Length: 213
Image 1: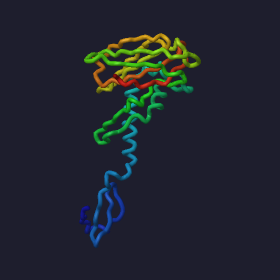
Image 2: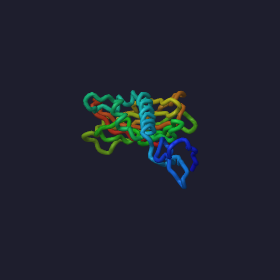
Image 3: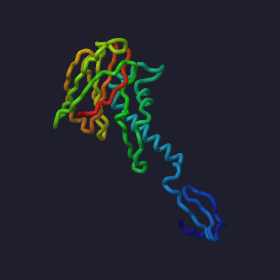
Image 4: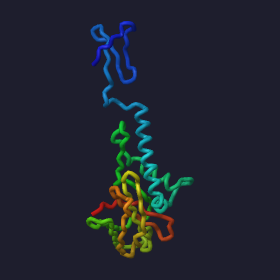
């Protein structure tokens, strides 16, 4: 709380900026708005800009995967549009002043559709740059779950620059095991996803986040 000498002015009451003015015991006083008060419009706009910018950077890095994973699109929509729409809530501003954000990669979607998701496991070679994927055949095949559905793996690194690598790792009914070598330029923490796509490429499954074992 601060005492304000405004002898040459009339007494002030109300708020100007983040300072609330009032008169106490005949003296002009001022109280600064606490940090837990509602955010200003400018703060809200800045947060939205930071979130949007991070999603744009991520979507640009993931273009090859998005083109495979988002195939059943609304009219005039692109895979990038769908990615932004489906992932609008995965970015959080952790420090507005320093413009720091965090991405919840476990909630990220890089594919979406009505095809049944595949059964995929991934392990990382200890001390190496190899990821080993294995596709387990489904017990029953049928509509939206065909043996010849193609299965894809997507790897995203969240270093200073987002990087992405996508690879076809087999078919739903094949039971293949595939090793993917991560290039040196993907030097951030790795996040892995898998999804299935029909043999003709007309439909896809929703992507799954695969924790590294």
